[in-house]
Length: 423
Image (cartoon, rainbow, N blue to C red; front, top):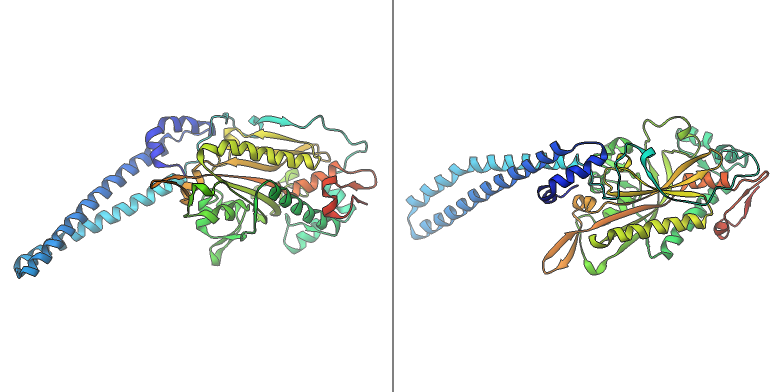
């Protein structure tokens, strides 16, 4: 959520930057500024009225103490006469605050200066790509055929139990999945991250805090009777560890990593994009989350990008890094880098990670501040990245390491899997 004072002081620049998202938010921002002005005016009137009541109440006490009951009773009537005005001002103020909150929720984060204007993923910038992709000597098969042939993943069994988009991993397929989770966590811990294991059900406040609600409500699974949501990513519960917290500057940086299953409805997805492991309703993911001082957050973003880059190099997978344009940028993000791995069996790029800086957008919603000392506080900057999402990594390992009669396992995974090949 944008900070109102920033909109008041830098409204013109913010409106121009938001145009990178292919929409003019000037009407929404001017409305927010007007609502905040009404809020401050109404609050001032209410404060004056309450101050007047306090003065009269003090005077009433003095009259009664001195024995002048007539004057005291007269002032009591005057105080009672002010009650309807107080109630009206309180009602007006509450309504203005609700309207202000709802309108702020409808404005996305301001794109960073590096974000260029664009409509969709076709306008994203490729900033890094692996060396030329080595074509396989045999005609590559897609991962769903390999998974079936080697009895690694059963899409039919998952469909019987839950429905499409819920695969069942079997034998070495399950072992490969677990090995990747352990490898990712160990890699992140070695990089300075502390492992956590968060809940996978969140309440509405948590969803709002990181920006999933109300923006992505239609993409989340909801348990109606409990008013709880299944998490779309570990970013949500992990970042919410610090909701309504003021943290010491000396405790920064905060670096956390966690594994969770993730759940997304993926409404509207169809065709080859949802084939096999390409797009699932349930999948495993390891996440990295950082809380930083604003002055350091973009340096940290570069560090996180390099961290994920080296992780993919360890897996020996061909990949590229793209910087998202305004039209493809997430609602809460100021700057995002996507990592895409090349799928040999499908002859296309598959996204496996997003690394983003949200600046103060999430921390304002979360009420997450840094204590700077001398009674000064500032909103923290939050960042997160997939490190990594597993389904497409598994798909690309099966496709890119396939041979005529077996599938090789990347060397860095051997000590986790206990086998070097799938035969």
